[in-house]
Length: 209
Image 1 (cartoon, one colour):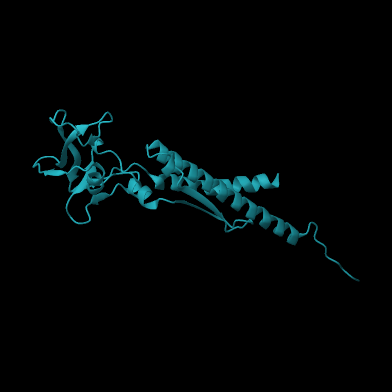
Image 2: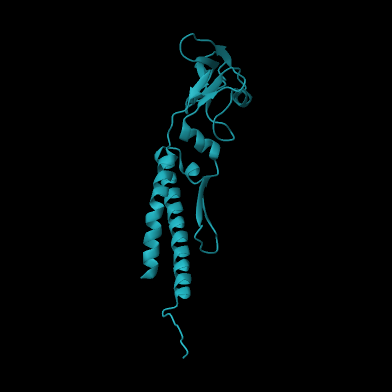
C-alpha cells in the first residue's frame, strides 16, 4: 500500500506570501511615518516664525529605496542642523573670545551676505566709526554719529552744518544671550514612533483585502 500526503493549500507558498505582505506593510508604514514626521517638523518651524527656507531644510529618505523589507526604515533630518538644534534646545550663547556679543539694532541694517551684520562690516559699509559706551545697568552700546535715512538705518551725514546728525545706537553689547526654545522636535518624533505599529497592522490588513 502506497500513501501520499498532500497539504492544500501549500504552507510554504502561504508563508512566502505572508512574508511578502509583511515586507510591504512595514515598508509602507515607515514611509508614512517618515512623511508625517517631516510634515510635522516643517509645520513646527514655520509656526515658530522661522520661515519656509529653514522649514524646507527638513529632508526624508526611506530605506531600502527600491524594494520592500521587514527591516525598512525612514530617516528624517535637517540640512541646517546647527540652526535647528539651537532653536530646539535653547542654548546659552557666549562670545568665543570671552568679551561681548554684538547684537545689531534696526539702525544697523542687515549684512550684504544676508543675516546679522557685524561691527566690522558695518564700519566698512558706512565709512563711520563706532564708539563704545559702557553702561553699568543694561547692555553697553556701540554708537555712531550720522543721520537716519527713511528706512531708519544710520548712514553718513552730508550736512556741513551738522543738521540732522544724531548719535544712534548701532549695536547692543551683552556678555551672553539665552536663545529661547522655540521647537520641540522630540515630541513629534515620539508620536511618529508610537504610531508605527498601528500603521504596520493597517497596511498588512489592507494588503490582504
